[in-house]
Image 1 (cartoon, rainbow, N blue to C red):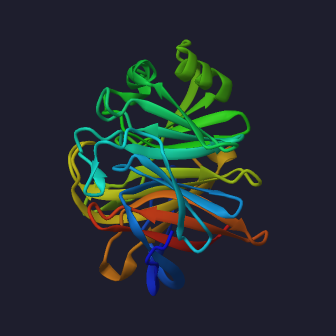
Image 2 (image 1 turned 90 degrees about the vertical axis):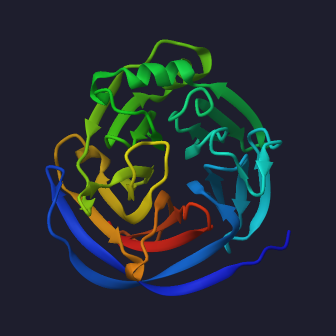
Length: 316
């Protein structure tokens, strides 16, 4: 499959800050060279994972799971949702499943709808790597129970991140920056077999602000070798989880998973992109090059234009 592939070099300003007890200090800036790729014919990128030599990307407005090679050229696309409504490059907003998070668990890719509109967005898709077969599950009951846990505090449900580590599943709700951890087998039983809502552990984190608006969680991944949690968070000028707003900027945050519940500091990187803010949607680990640095991949959503893929090297 031949695809136009644009490669851009850019100086991107990364603002480094830390948060003590989940509150941000004033950042100091430094410049680093990163690689920025335009993803041809991929708009609304919302989830990304790295599997061996392949990159998989899911979009909030597309019925396909896109498989890309290491040069970020599309080599395959797998239908994971009804394609009949895919017109002019996207599913209509009112009908889309709003796939916002994705994770590899064993030999299966898990893809979750955000739950921000029911029942259209109450969906779990599992893609088996062996043959790329697709199975779909209704998450309405699970999401309804999730929305009622005390830690949600009547905030809108909008699941934007999914991560797995050592038999635990982590879900990330954007509207109140809530992170909820479940036992994987209990989560699986609840979602796929209609079992009881699983026991959980939850923490709400405080993220930086832009123009007085706090960043909202948009993606997550956990290093399986080090247990470090990486998050993306973005700032939009909007009052709810359904409507898009002006993109104001994004952050990348990291913390050892073992310190997540102990009020230890996060490392925060603001992505400024020379005054052209991006909407970071998801993050994956491309490689662990040394004991000091990880290479991260970040996808963005431009709310209409083609998405970007950023490669970022960060200190552990």
